[in-house]
Length: 379
Image (cartoon, rainbow, N blue to C red; front, side, top):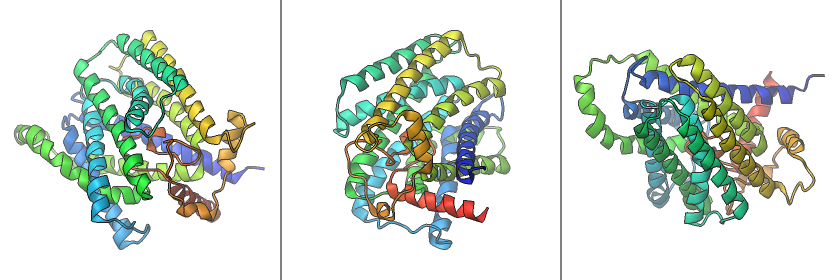
């Protein structure tokens, strides 16, 4: 007999992997001079922020799909504004990298995300320095260096942009934990876009005026409404798919899906963009880096689950993640711990998607499961 719940979980994971890969490939196609030729990454990011903010406003204020959180001026000024600044920076630099380097190489560089997050966490006091984790970070870094050395079309400018975007993203994740979670405030993807997207739009407006507006005035590029509308819609759909995936599964499942997505995206990018060439050294370096990332993920999951599931193997935990249901009392439990990725309380760094500003809390997990269960009942 077919397990409908398991099938629905696989379906959500498939949607997430498809949308995540699609958004990255779509952004590359729009920005690349060889294809749609819209070399204005700040403008594209601002379109995403404006569209997401407007949709979130209607979902919260008009259709009442999600209730707004209690947001004070003090929390907004000290938490939302700095987080929005780093969120805007990570998107800006990450999208600008598409102008200079291939999607495949960008994904290989993204293996540095755990390294950046770990060291930022240690510097800010949210993570503790550990020898085993440090050795994994060294392994990841060595793998990325080997992969970069094997890159045929290596571009220092694009690499610097991507690495800067990774650092900005790591700072955003650490700030999310330090500022918001310690205040007991958690935001799901809709409410986070409602508060953060408009603020990020404002932060992007200044560099847009200085860097891109003069070039757009003399450019012969025509604005295609349907291209940009569909692109922004895909980015928003990615956020909602992350919402469903996190609500339906656990940390192990999402991490496995993220690794699978990276390999699929690297392979797809060479097909969609034939000029992207992957060398054997690229693959060897990325495989080494991925070994470090997978081991790091296993350590984090083991740390979070060891007191609860001491004898479970990774496959057993994966199965339990699919079947796990949160208690109603979890709905109001804020995350106040010193581990960024513990148990079911994991954040967007595990998904490694730039379009997800804030995703972390058990109340998101509970609400997502409620939404998933109701959809399976309707079907």
